Structure formats: C-alpha cells, structure tokens
Length: 348
Image 1 (cartoon, one colour):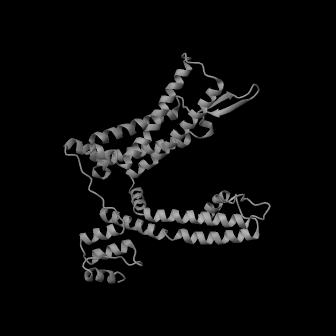
Image 2 (cartoon, one colour):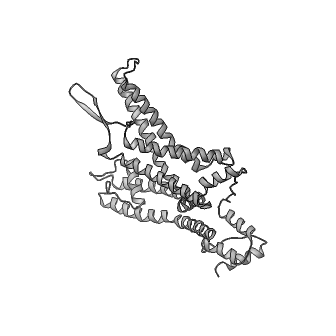
Image 3 (tube, one colour):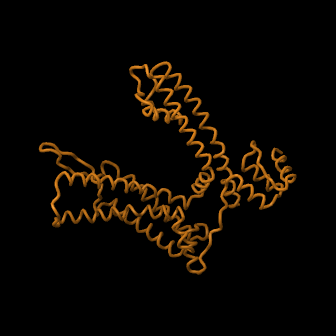
C-alpha cells in the first residue's frame, strides 16, 4: 500500500502524520480510516492540509423558533422544509429568467432626447414602469425574498452571526436593487405630475441623467448575484464553495503564475513584433489581452502575431503558459474530490 510508509512513520515519530506526494487526499483519508488512527489524527491531518474545521451550527432554544429555523434553513429536516426549498428555488429561477428576458430589445423601453436643433438621440430608459409585467413579477419575487429573510432573521439563534454569514449577505444584496429601483420609479412618477422644482440648465440635466443611468445600471447588475442564492439548496455548489475556500493558496499561486506569464509573454511578443508594419501590439499593455487569451487557450483571434519571430514567440508562450497554469490544478481537483467524498459519506 502506498500509504503504509506514512502510517509507519506516524507510529515511529509519536504522532506526526504526513501524506505522501503521490497519494491523493481522498485516498489517504480512507487509509487513515482503514488503519483506525482515530478522530484526533484525522482532524490533525485536515488542519495540516489546510482544511477549516466546520463548527456545529447551533439551534434556537425556543421550540417554535427552532421549528421555523429548521423549516427555512434545513430542507432535509422535513417534508414541509422541502416544499419551502422548492418554492424558494422556483422564485430564484423565475427572478433570474425575468432579469435576462427584460434585456431583450422587444421588451426594452426607450426615450428620445434632443441633442441638437436638427438631431435626436434615442437612449434606453433604465427606469421601469410600475405597470410593467416584468416589474410586477419582480415585485412578487422580492416579496418572497424579503419574507424569507425576515423570518429567518427572527428565528435565527444568533442575530449577530446572522449578518456574518455570506449567504445572508447575498440575500440582503439581492433585494437592495429592487428598493432603490422602486424609489427611482416613485421619483419618476413625481416628475410626470409636473411638481414645481428649481430650474435646471439643459447641460446639468443631461449630466444628471447620464449619472443616474450609470448608477442604475450598476445597481441592476447586482441582481445577477441572486443566482448564488441557489447554493443554499445545492450540495454541489456548497462543495464547490468549500473547495475554493480550501484552495485559496493554490488559487493565489495560479493568479501569480498568470501575472508572471502575462508580463513575460506580452513583453516577448511586443519586441518580436516591433519590426512588423501591421503589428497589433503597439505597446506592452496592448499585448496583455493577447497574453491572457493565449494563456487560457481561448484564442479569440482579434490580436495575432504577424511576423515569423512573433509567431515563434507566440507558440513558445502558449506551450509554456499552458504547462505553468496546469501545475496548481491537480491540487484543486484533489480538494474537490475530498469534499465530494466526505459529503457522500455523510449522506450514506
């Protein structure tokens, strides 16, 4: 057995457990169980590998509060909790579908703004109408999200830790854009009533409109984060999140490799293409985009080397960068396998 030397060293050294490099995490974890080293050795091994020990989540002491908390927080606790989870997933998917469909050209609202004496400019109206079907469906979804958030907050065992949970922060962020948009709709309704206001110059009005539209676009973009609400009901997304959390060191190493590769590749191709008249690379920063696309094997083709030396450098950079990026990937895959097998073992 490839892990026997490590197990033997564990007994010889008085409790020092080191995983062999050629043994995956999940295999070595099974070996620890097979040799019956105990929970203490298992926990110590997980800490050495960088895994964070999961704390037991407390339950409310009040019986009614506990039932409500289990109903909304643990879908596997009862049949009613599964029904609530199904409703929540349906509402999340509905809000995401509405978010995508309302960007279709036939569903957009447009306004005409005069720019010159003889010309006009058509701009998209980012402020929805209060009678718009998409806005009404969005309102129903927000009512459910808000109700779910308030109930879970009132039933949670620790109010302070409630706001420290990433999933709860995502829930709050998911509903904030609606209320900001609603305030904007109310403000637009006041404008249509021709309420008296201080006079504003056309230039200031145009600047304010541009700034307001930019802010609204950013706010509406935040709505896409609702898709992360699905992770509350998906074991696969939870496993992926734990994998990324346990692989932060490897991901940092991957980003560092990418940074080095981008600088080296863009510099090399810039100087290799310096003598070409039709070169796409006017400077090293211009070559950053090409380097990232080449390193990730995407290859859009919008920027390509023209000269012979540029093509040679591009080929070498592509091969070297692919090998460099591939180095941390097995560790991340091993972490995913570990969390996946642990989750399946708990279900069994």
